[in-house]
Amino acid sequence: MIYRLVRLNIFLQHIYIPVKNNNGVQETYTRRVQKTGRSTFIISLPKEWVEKTSLKKLDTVKIVTLPFGLLVTTDGHEQGRESVIRLSGNETPDEVVRLFFSKYLDGSDRIRVELSSYLPQAISVLKDRIRRWLVGVEIIGETATELTAQVLPVSDKLPLHTSLERMGEITSHMLVEAMTAFSRNDKALAEDVVRRDDEVDRFYHFITRQLNIAVRDYAKLRNINLSDPSDCISYVLVAKSIERAADHAVTISNITLSTTNNSKPDQRIIKINAKVAELFDTSLASFLYPSTELANKTLSQIAAISSEMNAYLNSQKKYLDLERRLTELVVINSVRRVAEYAADISEAAINLATKDSFSK
Image (cartoon, rainbow, N blue to C red):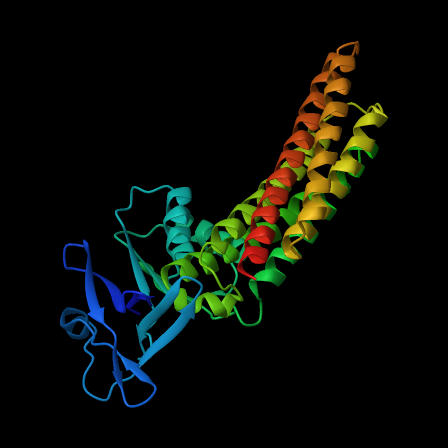
């Protein structure tokens, strides 16, 4: 879909229509607002844009109101975006996965992978990663040299706000249970935490895709219940912070799975992690339900817990068990990083809440 931003300046009574030419350079056309009849205001559309969009007499256009102006877009049914990935045969399975994921995140509705030769291992890995890490992707065609995937429209059934909230809930439980597994040397629980990271990744990729589509096509902002394109920045920052926090839960769980030391960890780590997990929850709540009061309170508590972590690290040097000392050092550093991500989320919440109150 092709769209152009329209800004109306009441005082100058001109309308500005930015249009990109064939070289990709944005050109600005000035149009004077005219009045016809008693209450109708009209402007003319740039000839270049009309020709490029194949508009003709009696065609309709959509006009979408945005906080910073108006959006004019053609009203035709948008064709699904198809992307083609052509492989030379020298790519590793991970490289193939990255290429496919880049098209998914960019908003392609259909992705076709063309192979110059039979690559069973790469395709097997790709299909496994699609199943584990992507939402709404179905393989609709496969031969020895081609694979076609269709991305189903699931945004209405899985709203952006709900996706972020669900992603945060899974991560919150992972943080608590990863430390429980570490304190009890419970390898079964640690394995379960690691498995749940796939679900967090699925939500992260889905949210990133929705935001990329919205940034490119402002008319779709309302489909994900956002009113301002600048909100996308805050949402992608928060989604990334949640995804990274889940990765640190996995780090702690992997330590549990690899350690052979059955001695009990320092209880101070357990208490610090519990506080950090709680602050992670409150930071997310302050963003999902914008509250500067809750966000500021969370930031103050994060600063206090950082002092506790520093005190622990200073006293931790007294341990005689070198292996345990190094293990707990990795764990407390992961907990520290989660606290930092909670601070990032709280700051994003403040930005969102203050912007909302200003606009009101």
